[in-house]
Image 1 (tube, rainbow, N blue to C red):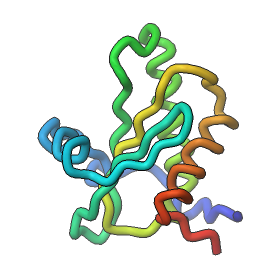
Image 2: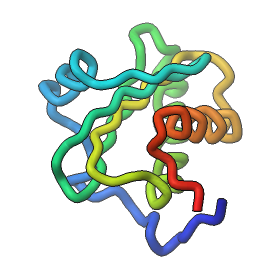
Image 3: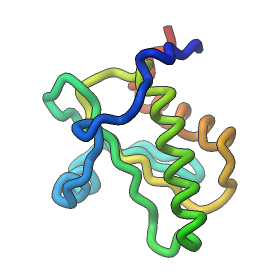
Image 4: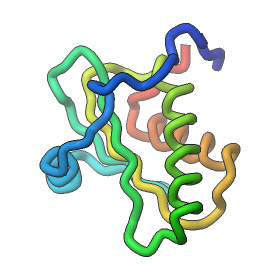
Length: 121
């Protein structure tokens, strides 16, 4: 799968889920897909773009480990976002464990593929 680097770019403010009410709504009402080490919550948002959040479970290591985990997740999502269906809100929940960029790539790609949201053209 080739990535169009011109389409990936940075996250705009509108592409992030920041409101705690939106997090709670996705956790409660969103569809759930899980694999060992990660879980994806998603629902349609009736917008022309995707929004994403990266919550971590309680007790996820120290601040350095949490920041590294979120950084890996954001980068993988940024690379994959041009291959995803649009109009969804996503929460990507990562559990502590094997934290490497390569394993995070595999996890997040598998989550989106299992959910049927990945266009592999």
